[in-house]
Length: 399
Image 1 (cartoon, rainbow, N blue to C red):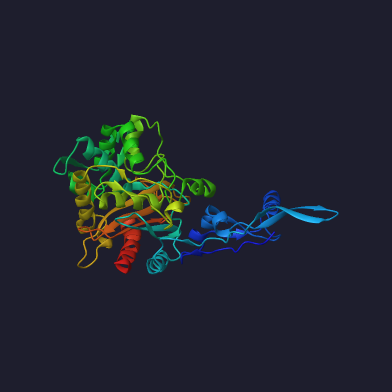
Image 2 (image 1 turned 30 degrees about the vertical axis):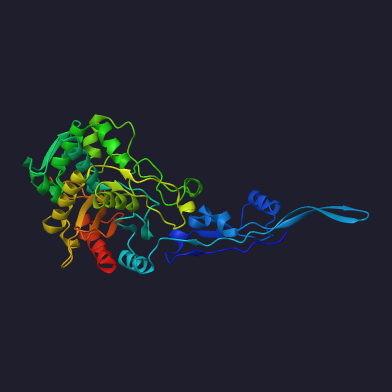
């Protein structure tokens, strides 16, 4: 058998995208040998190397001969097929800026084209480790509530520090007083407003909205066969979410889990007028998969959510993401993971919590080009303080 000419992956994103090669396991080595691959051939074990192993490796050629006393006769022949290069959607400059902005932080970042949904950069835990998304999930809750007609931008809500949903008290961050219009409540990330809205929306409607945004489905990075081979984690919300849990889930807590890629996709949906585009990672349509655009909500509702996201950065919890002469739309998130181990405050002070910090965004808000989502695990600070500045740096470089 003749060896194949192995191709390469064209990207600058490194291991998070390209994956890795390694010696095959014994059973797989036998399969490769039977197929005509030379001894010592490596195989993809993760990322694109695994997703498109056969495309990259090509197919060995060979001959089947019948040998007798008078010589040999060729019964069948197969020409070798050279490996095919896989070109990704990654933008090298944006990828470098994203990796630099994330730095040594334990977390992830995803950058998308606001129009097409194509992946422009991935860094760290961009799609590999779903975490509670915290208040970034309010983008989804707000969309569902506005779409259902149970609230509108000018509705006024009580200014309080907490609300009771599902029989439990849900407090605002730092027990702050929060409320007013829906726009102000979103800008200040009022749990006391959005948890009751989620409860009013109900478990089924909240799940249906989240699933339109891409929850409970594999990320659309490449075709279904490749996604299955790689085992890309889904962002999830319980499919049979009880109404009693809808309030907590509506603020991105409970059993809701998401990745920066998913929350970037949610922001892309709003930036794109309510249409969610596939988050393709490769250019070749045959490898990218035939995923349709999904109409998540109406352009009118998407515009309302966008206006609320603009206010987050203009005057709310996301002001650290503001850029000069560019309107940024965004949403902060601070997800509580549990009580910090060790000494706790004395007296009546609430116990300290381990938290993940989030920020999802797009810009320019008037004509969106770039979508950025950032997650920092065990950040010990809120999303507006630590995640928003990272997103700002990426947006500034990308624009």
